[in-house]
Length: 161
Figure 1: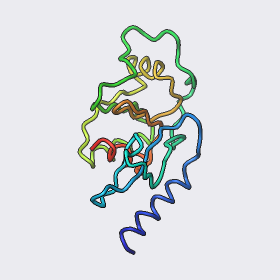
Figure 2: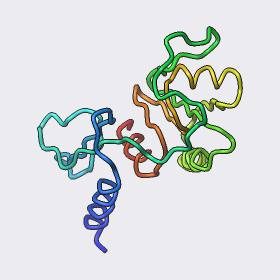
Figure 3: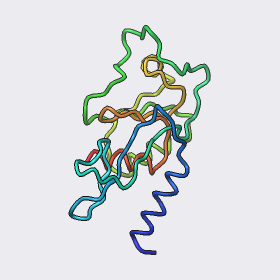
């Protein structure tokens, strides 16, 4: 199978598997003048968007008792939910299969990250402040990706380059 068709097929499968919604993280796929595929969270300057992807409702392990809305008052020792640009933070739980897959992905790509276990007091407080209801949750470059699929993480980390 030619690389173009393989990429097209993979992109269509990813897009078909993704639900569309209002609160999604949007990624734009375009082809640069040099023929390279570019993923970005901003539309290309040329206006030639090949695909628009929304990353939402990826597979997660739902945390029992987690509220889907952020709490008004967070614990004073909780780290802020926002991360500095360039930092990668993974909210995870040791019992979560998707978290193990996300950690394996990050390790396999050599991506340094800070891990917050939501079953520890400080991790639980930070997770509550984040307002998520499932793990894993990845924060990087101002983006929040709830859940895990290799394709979604590929798109996020390709956009960082």
